[in-house]
Image (cartoon, rainbow, N blue to C red):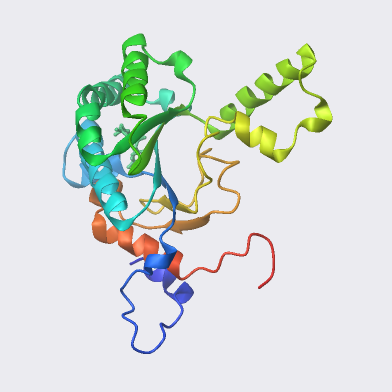
Length: 256
Ligand code: FPP
């Protein structure tokens, strides 16, 4: 547990196991910023790509655990619009790891009842990756145990920019009145149109930043930060995050 966060855990009622999760308060939707792959590799004297490889194993574990615990939507920040600034070797390596993940994800997803979706701007991705993403989305659309969303070439500001362009075109064509642009209309034009807003955001590796992730959708989420590096994030880490969430009182701007 992150010791700095001790103060937010209320004392449990007598007779209640303080470590047990409240089955009534499992977050429906969890978003993760998986940070620390590079540092995880460095700690083990390995190169950064080995860290990303371990990161993918941690993603598989997170999917399994989230599904077991009853989380219905899991959204992972895989590659941001800013990540292109990394070395060509690292970017190519990450894209190849993604290829390898996608090459057998449909088979695995069908066993686990996983629906795969992708958010972000696909226009800058290699054509074979886009084809694999579309294949995975199409073939897993019928599954409903857990919706696993991969944010790929994703940036919150870029998503808002693309959404505004879509809406501006409709206004220009005369199919949408400017006054009709409600919050709901905006939400329905985001990449996440079919997904509920995250209830809980988890960021690993001790960084306390949003890094342009789901900036619209996280407006009312609970934020959980842990020092654990992403490759070390396991079932117990996820339970710890949900335990934290269990202790929070969500007011959505109101008073209770
Ligand atoms: C953060 O660690 C991780 C990334 C920027 C990208 C990792 C992407 C993958 C492993 C591909 C994901 C694929 C699927 C299937 C979801 P970091 O490199 O920023 O770590 P550091 O801050 O310690 O250097």
